[in-house]
Image 1 (cartoon, helix red, strand yellow):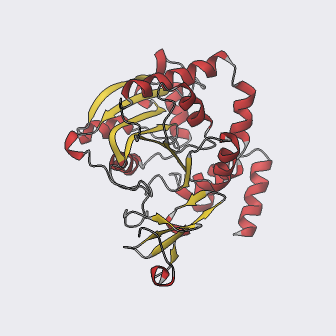
Image 2: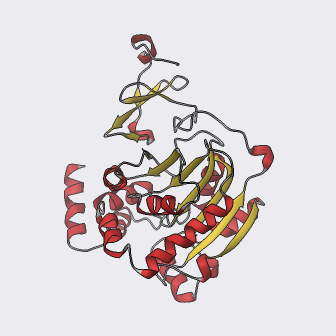
Amino acid sequence: MNKELTKIKEIYESGHNIIEYLKKQENRKINSFEDIMISYDFQAGTYAANYYKHQNDELWVRYYDEIAKILNKYWPDGNSEAVLFEAGCGEATTLASVCDRLDKKAMKNVYGLDASFSRLLSAKSFLGERKFRLIMGNMLSMPVCDGSCDMVFTVHACEPNGGNEEILLDELYRITKSYLILFEPAYDLAERKAQERMLRHGYVTRLYDVICEKGWDVEEHHLLGGGVSLNELNPTGVTVIKKNERANVRKEPVLADPVTKRPVVQSGNALWCRESMLLYPVMNGICCMCEDNAIIATKYEEYNELANI
């Protein structure tokens, strides 16, 4: 792996596309989770730097304003314990910017999940004193309990997962209690040139089709703010999905073993799941909860005094 990462570093520093290189190596057309994780990890820090460069630009301000407007519209009133969860938060530039614009600024339960540990380290630095919970995890198998998040949203996080639309949507819908809000490439609303670019990069193209096939309750589906986007060749669409009332079962706690989806509890610098007997490390305050991070610990409870387990 060290030799491979060294080679990938050379690819990145030469300005070439890491994901394209990795796909070519294995003769694949679909981006894998590992492709996405490695590519974004090498990019860590660039998104925060880009934010500081453009944070006062009119386009960027309007972009964040429009996202916050949608989230404000559906945020549950009078619930101080409500959970806001961004899947694919990257360096938390959008999460922080949007939360600063939300009416309910006293929110206590804000979570951000991303595949890249380095990006989450950048996010932690960017967030400063904000008490957001950062989790390293796979969006295709999220370490989150069923129906534990009042509002789940994504901002171009589903984007590189073309071909996995149904798996992604099922996972996002599973963890949602009330609303799932997608700010993702709007393939069905885009011009042909933009569609061709999405296909070339392996972006999602069937999100809305799959949602319709599943018969979910769609409140809104349109381009963001009349078409505001940070890239005109990658237009941001808005899709608001309301979860069926019968499915609104709140689970505690929020975090779960990604294998069994059973709750975990924190003990020191680890998260433990009694049912699966798997242990996950917490490093630099970041919960590392990809399946590959799991440590088999069948006797962990026996040799540790865990409070409230």
